[in-house]
Length: 280
Length: 280
Image (cartoon, one colour):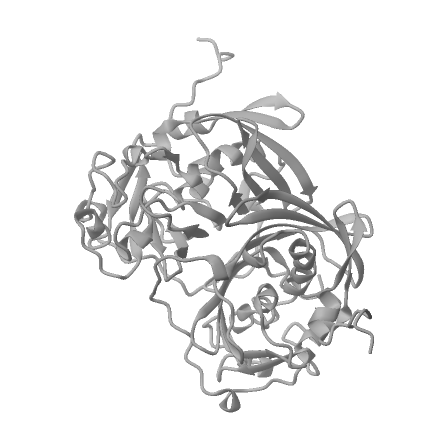
């Protein structure tokens, strides 16, 4: 038994978001094809690779607020993340990340970290977790073996165990309700616990809610994506709910909430995305 | 009549957000005390000064998505904004801004601009404008002459003509409903039209919705602030509504919507803020 041998990450998400220092504040990671929709790596996964570099740089452990602007599509393969520490204070620290692949910047993001165990102040919550039947009464989809409405195979769905709320994935059989909501119970397929580091990914891990609004939606690239982590998830399933309320001239917001098994809100997200025509 | 004499900006907002080139991608502006709450310049106004520098740099006219991380409080007086063009494409361009005052960075922000007149695609909106009585049946507050619940005089309120929805500013007389919502009709006091450039400011221009949730809220500094501009406002009053649904351990989100006089959604915002104890 040799404790000095570094352990391989036990879970897919940790293996596929690992970064190594490459000097001068630059970190090297790999965009794995295991979290893609067709040829397109999931934006939340790409951000999670970037945040692994930020987490290794900043003194605080938790991403209180992360804002990413996606500049160009990312491809499978190596990426470099240049991290600039911007400010380090007692309660919060902020860094900027630049993700570069093949010599071109793909995403730039700002991240303000803090320590959820160290904060205190008043609590007043009027929001409530999405009403869901128990996981066993929710729906599994075909977990990445059937194409999405845009004709793409979502490899990412094989990494996730999602039990969809009844009625929210009827677009898989061509039925749209025009509500623009999707939600359900979420876990990693390989049993990895949902922790704080997984939340910025999970807020982008479901099929787009806009699939319930439009036929032949095509690709839905994210322009801007912001996540606020509000709590440390308790063990067990998390509940996630995503809503698009305004698709205007092909642009849409998607708002997300993640609630833990104890009924506490642990993350909120919003993104601005654009519908690209099929085949574009 | 000499057309070569540059006009002074006719309106307060334009005068107080004007920037001048200072060389090497740096712009010089002034943080005016006219948009402050006590000693604290309003975050949306500070961002508007920064965006004036971005707008002067990027080829596209409209801020589709702006994300600001506020690092340290800004004070009244000169600021420098260093603008880095990050990417310029056909449909969108992105820049980064760094706002520096007295040698210390106060805010860093990412801005993706586009052209609202040039976009096209499907439209499907399930959201609806906040139900409001006509402006003449809404409430004016004391427009900056009476202290807010945190004891501060809001000079910014003298720049704005806000007609609050009944019941949403009862905190001014010490009554809280625990709903965490505030809204009303909004215009500039000096008659400046509400245009696209004003929207990132207006999404932070009302008293915090959290004033309806907690007594003695103190100062409410913004950590992160994101605005999506979704349309060009039609002339006339805009309707604004802001909601805080989760105050957790002193941290809160505030979600905002602005609708124009024709009932079209023109901006969405979200911020993460923190309640600082009174006197802190």
